Picture (cartoon, rainbow, N blue to C red):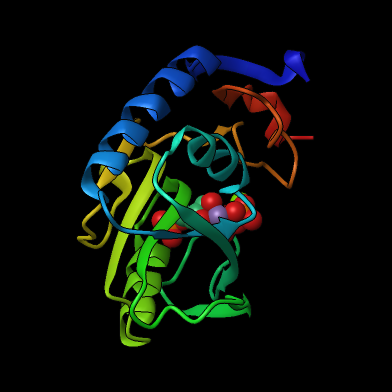
Length: 179
Ligand code: PRP
Ligand code: MN
Ligand code: MG
């Protein structure tokens, strides 16, 4: 797997340190509240596990699986729910947890969807964001790292379902895609 890598963009140490800073900010912002963390399967699994363990605020975890309709790799903004929440979000302070915001279309849809179900608040925490790729304005309260608009893998992010377990974020050699 190491042979497939071109460059490391964010190291495991940088992720760990930044997530600690984000957790401190979240704890400060949610004082006296309880958080319903909503992880977006599958990419958000690593962030959810690491960020939640750094939080002191009381919290519950739930998961959604969504799929965007449209042409293969690009999201279209039309989202289908493959697995819905097990919790009622009515009156809850929801924190959506993502690995990456690319076009922002998934998140924009999800935020509106959870608000329409009566959530008291809906905020977003993401490990990574690609500002140059964003197609919609979606307010993101907690961002780990802004990265260039390149295809990245690791820390939850996949290429054809592989590389999610890399502890860092990196790019793949062009030869990997031509296999
Ligand atoms: C990726 C990523 C985000 C979404 C971001 O998930 O994990 O959930 O795309 O894209 P957007 O900002 O352009 O909407 P993907 O659909 O690849 O599913 P996965 O998490 O199972 O890999
Ligand atoms: Mn995802
Ligand atoms: Mg994916």
